[in-house]
Structures are given as C-alpha cells and as structure tokens.
Length: 338
Image 1: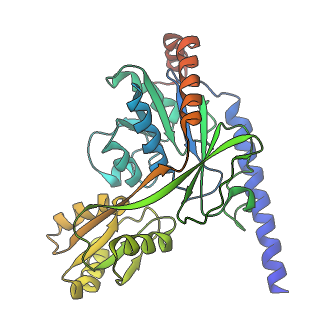
Image 2 (image 1 turned 90 degrees about the vertical axis):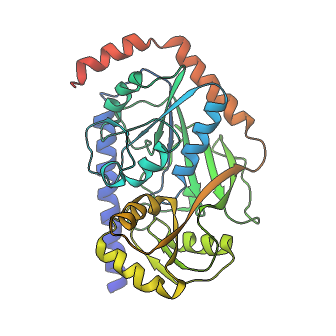
C-alpha cells in the first residue's frame, strides 16, 4: 500500500512538473527572439550527467577549425553572478564551475538571461561569430538555429519524466541532431530517432595534470559513480572514494575531511577538472598539503560526423545570409537595458 501511494505521489509530482514546464514554454516562447549571431544549442531532454560540457567544447573546437569565432553562452549554475557578464577570471563561485571550464578555452558569457547575454557578444573580438548555448534546450526566450541533444548511458526514449525518471521535458523532434556518448565498446549504435540523425561519440578520461599514483578520488558531479570508476580505470589504480553533490561548493571543513582521508596516500587526491576549479584555489588559500591530479573527459566521434558538421555550417551560413545583425541588435535594445 505504501509503495502504491509513493508511486501515485510521484506520478502527481511528475504531472505538476510537466504542466509547469509546458506553461513556462508557452509563455516565454511568445516573446522569443533570435540572437544577432547564429546560435547553436547543446542541450538535453534529461536532467544532469548527459555530457553537455565536453560536447559543447567539441562543437566549439570544430567551428573554430572551420574559421568561425565561437562564443559560449551559459547560465552559470552554482555561481553568484546573475546579470550577463563576460567571464574575465577563474572564479568558479562567481561564475559557476562549468562556466570556468569553458572560459579556459573560449570566450564565455554567463548570465541567467541568455537573450541578454547574446547582446554582449558584439564586444568580443572575432570574425564570423557563432554563439553556442550550453544547456539551452529549455530556455525558450532565445530562438535556436541549430539544436543538438546529448544523451549518455540511458537513452532518453527509454527514460521517464521527473521525479520517477530523469526526463526534464517530453522528447520532441524540433532538434537537428542527437549526440550519444558511450563508455563501452558493446554499445549498440542507432542511426536515427524519428528521423533525427544520431551520431556516436566515445568518451575518454584523460589526465590533465598531476600523477597516476594511487590516491583519494574526490568527485562532485551529476553521475559520481561512473566518474569515480572512470578515473580509477584510466589511472590503473584503486583508491578510497569521497562523493559530493553536483556543483558542490567546497568549504574549509570539506578540505579538512579530504586531507584526513588522503593522508595515507601522502595527500594525493584525484578529481575532475570541474572539481579542480573550486578545490585548487581553496588548497592554495588554506596552504593545504593536498596534491591534486586533475582528470577531464574528451569525446571523439565513432564513425563519420561530416554530415553533422555540414548541416551545422549550412545553417550558420544561412543565418549570416538572411539575418541582419544590426536589425537584431535594434530589437534587443528595445527589450534590454544595460
């Protein structure tokens, strides 16, 4: 009886969430605007842990190699900055951990209002700019020109709505491509979903700095168990583990716990790049003896992704041909005050 009641409660909660999400979509879509530059969205239908960050960087690198100037637009989850700002320093608590990771590679604008953020792009040097939205599929005020859906491990069509599953919206076909990231060789490749082409990418955990010597493994991401396993597999060691919530704000008390647990490893600590942008400044500020080994994820295509790049470039060029940037910026000045 308790189980049935619990399931019924989840169903009600999921229905309310879905209704609220749909109302938000309808209301915000009425005032949706195009950006003054072509906009590529890298998002997901599922909450957390679908590999948007490495996918966003991969897209940006490909476009840069093709002669464009990528500018990343991001909400900055976990950061304190709300007004649209060009990231100018490595401050994960101001801008968010994923924001700082992006800013290490490409110009990045952070802010709650992505429409407002696009207006700042004209102040960033570069020819043929392309805006890349990290996690923008559920942001309805800004119209996207090319949308990519990321998924990892659990396919979205086999998932359920929150809170029973991880779906944050009902999957739809108003996207241009699906980017599936895999961990295992036995993954079954799918060519498309409802006519949307799907491209398969392999994930590789790589050491950015430090050593592969055994140590405490610290992880604060959306899917910590997979992360912990991948780091130890790539490093070829087995160590103690310490898990934190996604986007965790590390404190001096956390640092003390980590120091105590890593003492037997001579204070060697393995962590993700996402955790390192928060831990490293704290280690320095507290004069901690911790020695960080930083791991990151890279993705590489499995098979031919040229059709994906061709379709994306075709859309970008179409936007540049047909959309007046001056007219777009005039529209923004009417709705945005700086």
